[in-house]
Image 1: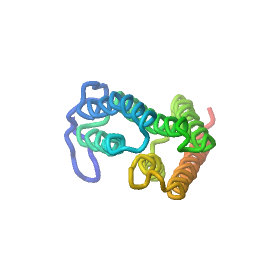
Image 2: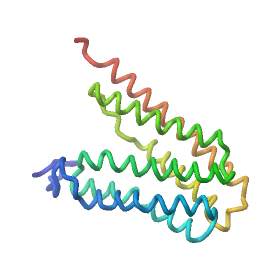
Image 3: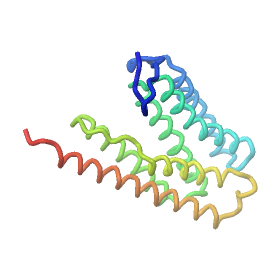
Length: 195
């Protein structure tokens, strides 16, 4: 099976309904390792072990996407990848909120946005409206990973000012990207033909 991409014909290695793919293996590994990592974050906070685990899990967010684009995207991957991202980010924010490292207002805003936009995308998808992630969403994810990472990184573990800036910058772009998705969904729904 071949797919045209930017003038280049690529051969798909997997079909859209495939489950046992290399990209999904990376994603499932991320999900499995998220649990112990989040427990370590809550129990230990800043340490070299937690920051390295966090860094590996954050970086593999791009790896599974890269593999999926090369081998072919799947419906299972489209479900599992965002799930792994949400578990990691919301878990990291929650663990740091429970430790008192993140303000609960920030944790609740990020949590409400992530869960609300996931529900909205699902609702829009049932109406035939696709709202894929754009560059703003990628920046959002990266800033969320960085905000948690700064707290876990031993040299910046006591830099409360830096942590606050990173946290609220992540919250701001998280909300901005949510509004962007709502705006796009609204525009798409208005352009639908009347039946």
